[in-house]
Length: 190
Image 1: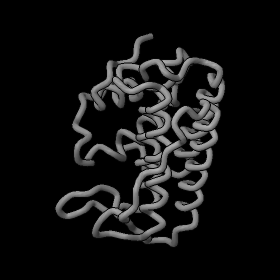
Image 2: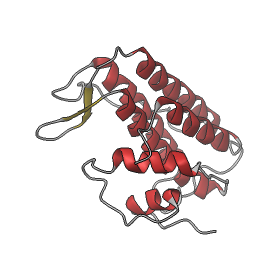
Image 3: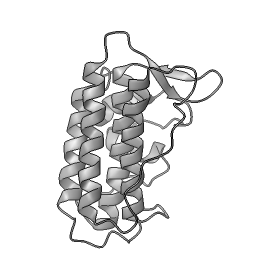
């Protein structure tokens, strides 16, 4: 095993996603996001909400159920730059929340019976998982390069291997492609 996925890994995937999306704010975000039925705009908006939600969940310290609040979204028709700015804010909130959490802090990570709780590294992995997959989806739709570091992908695969609903994958020597395949996306080419 390569070690836990950390807040530093989360920062790496945050920067990679923000840089890639930021390079394409002048493109058509109404196109499908990779193989998803969602548009790039909707997928990016969903990603901002997810990353924000993980910060909120960890900060709440709730362990029995999700905090009883609704999602956050950009106003309909907001420009792509607003989505990039929103993702920047959500990523910084999650990073700061992880760093500010006292050692031993746990919070609900996933619902179920019983709910699954996690620590700061688990929340870094949860946010990183969302970013890496939807970062890829949006970049594929916008025809922007997106190639996360192999070591980070391997740590994310290892860290999340036992999580419910993620499934298993026959591991290859390409952990980035393995993450894509495990999520039901096509393996990367090239």
